[in-house]
Image (cartoon, rainbow, N blue to C red):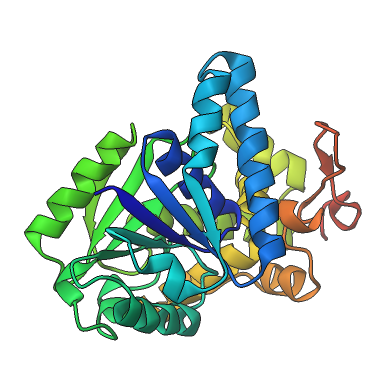
Length: 299
């Protein structure tokens, strides 16, 4: 595989484009607006600058990597030469199904279609295409250039050959792929999201405050980041979406999202990307400050 198309230029999409271009692949980055693509290129450039400053890559390697990325606002144009397409759009089932219908129509017949979904069924996505054996999940972790894991999710019809190719490709990106089967939340989020949800319930029920809950998990469980800070980093709206997928997929009330999470998201506080979630984020500041509404334990 030489040519990779990435659909969506947000946090995950630009990170995926970054990694592929840095490892010698030609990347077509696709989004609906030119301004989104310009922002993505700026982000990729800044992240590569950090690698240059740390000596991880040279300035020449950065320049060559950036030159491998082309941008498109037309999905049809962006995927017409793809050997592999990686969809990294918002975690919304109907949106992803619509995208995969178009990918199936416009991508070359032999192209593999992958989704970076963190919870949605690959089997369900594959069913709207005429190539279900060539549809697979590639769940990268955030931040993509740093995190080593790729969850490779086999749909019900995904072929052994496609799975092998994607596992090998992931290793070519200096990642560590892990093959999992297609059940709600896969492995990472089936385990992680109930923990985050329980941390939010602990806050909601007044067991402890934001900082206290995160401190217990960092110091007591050796987690590098507390669950509430991690939820902010992932995006509280994304956490809510994944929990709803788990609840619907398993039909089990234990996956029901905490009412506090629902309210915070509906109020527009989605974590780092909006500047406030359980913590308040100030540009340029590295201090972790509990959001005003959570500065005292909830009684």
